[in-house]
Image (cartoon, rainbow, N blue to C red):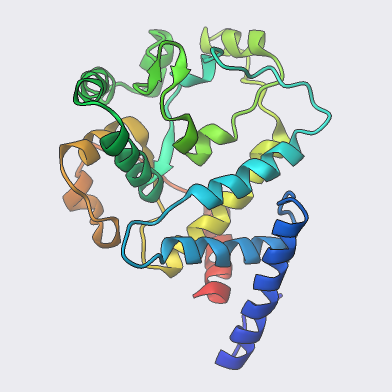
Length: 261
């Protein structure tokens, strides 16, 4: 499918994709695997990010992801449950839109004491590398009493980590040459949604790089960051590591941008 060549052609395509998206909603938000479905999702993501009078809201995008996630794991035995948190001891990356949403959630719903405790936990982890955190079993700062304290607004990176064997997750965390047994179809679904959302962000002029969550959250809690005027060097400096998207995914993002901008 080639990018639209004229304004009329683009509008026609957008109407088609919007109808495709509406059909996707009516049929239960199935797993977006076709190009048309991914393009329609990119358009919807752009609408979410372009909200007037406020910060972008990822809630509906997360609901779409979760529905596709449920479809992707059908007929697969799921080991994940509340209290099982082996994967909550590895580094997590998130985009600034996701980080901003988490920061707003924390500032608006948590008590001052809870935020102070979070900041203290972040201070012990934000300079640690991935290997050290796993070796010392240092939990994510958002892990409270064994459960995720931001579960409703957790980023895509966490949503797509679905395991079929908790014992293998524990071995992987212990460094026993085992890999986390995540479900591939859910991971692929996550990659698809990541590309669609990245294309929407790029079309809106918003940074779509993924950043290490702990160190980035530290910056967001220290002061206000306008994600529409975000400057990576000024706002994050060298303290926040970036998780660059693979070249192949960048190419997909650039293709989708031509359809949705």
